[in-house]
Amino acid sequence: MENCQVGGGPVMAALDLSSYSETVFVHALTLARALKRELILLNVINSRGRETLDRLNAQGFTVSFEQYTEGIKAERNAVFSADYLSRAGETPARLVFRVGLPYEEIVKAIVEEGAGMVVMGCKGRTNLAGALFGTTAEKVFRRATCPVLSVRGPEHCRLP
Image (cartoon, rainbow, N blue to C red; front, side):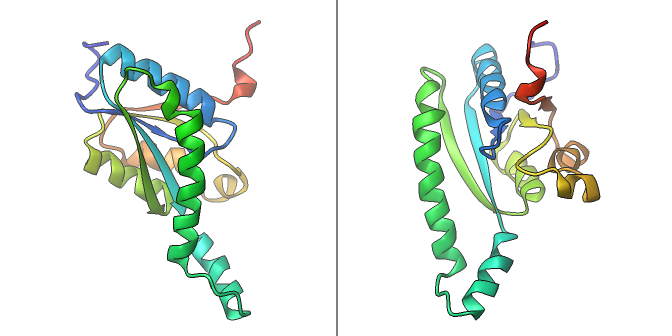
């Protein structure tokens, strides 16, 4: 792999806790180990939830977006720590949260974290928006400053 022009930075796994996350994690961890790189687990809290929260707040629900995102981070931190970070073993690994539009935050994180490669699924939690506007993965592929490895979902991982 050393001859493949993979950057010297960490391997970043973009995980959204969809059915693709396990496969993405396994591939990213395997690459990080093989390349002797740090593994960054990136999770983006979609800021589109703010619109829904604003509508609820207009009806008397009193939770700020900041309180909402802190609650989501705490819940996801527990999942990522128990299910993913604990399996990294000797491979240096850390969790990074971002809040915003997923493709924008992934691209920003690539630059800010100096990622040498990103591993992500080709579909996320829902594909309706992807069918209409293009998937997060497609947008990241067009804008990323490092190689992006697309991992197919578990339905494609069956051996013949």
